[in-house]
Amino acid sequence: MMEKRLLLKMQGITKFFGAVRALHRVNLTLSHGEILGLVGDNGAGKSTILKMIAGVITPTSGKIIKHGKVTALLELGTGFNHEMTGYDNIYLNGTLIGMTKNDIDTNVQNIIEFSELGEYIDENIKTYSSGMKMRLAFSIAIFSNPKILSVDEALSVGDAHFGAKCTKALAERKKQNMSVIYVSHDLNSLKLLSDRIIMLNQG
Image 1 (cartoon, rainbow, N blue to C red):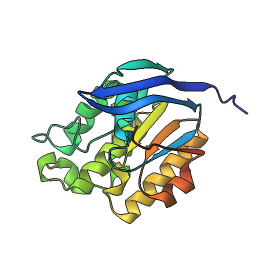
Image 2: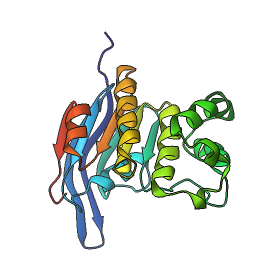
Image 3: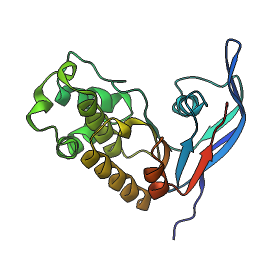
Image 4: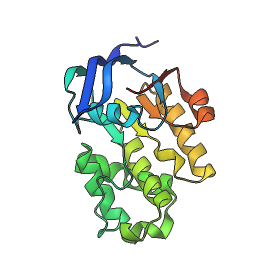
């Protein structure tokens, strides 16, 4: 059995936005092959934590120590060019999250099949619904094979069938020792997937 080594450590993280304190002295760890759930009311600081782990924003104080590639599913549409087709956006978004062209070439058909977008893969992203964008974004992310995948409520946008498919895919990747930080208001999926759940309250 593989040792559950530490992949992520956040020590004393504080984040101010002007006069607003979004997070205050947050400490958490994430181990190899662990799914960590994050819950809390809107404005509790969940998305701020994920953005800091992804490197989108930096903490005001404290340390974030990461070991391995991080892929983040944050706001829908991030990393997509809406004037390009879904197919072309696989290459664009895949490159932005650290995949090589060879990685994408190897996985492009798997990504398309998992997304279930069919002929819509050749349409421009600007014609996609929120659910279709989520399907494509999740499919690219899951086949980028990160050490840490962070998901910010993205699965709540899609339909029940695809949500269940994503939940199953996350559970399978966990068995392959991928670690996940999962933000959701869906307590059933959190209970099903998570090894631990952290509740945030006003940072």
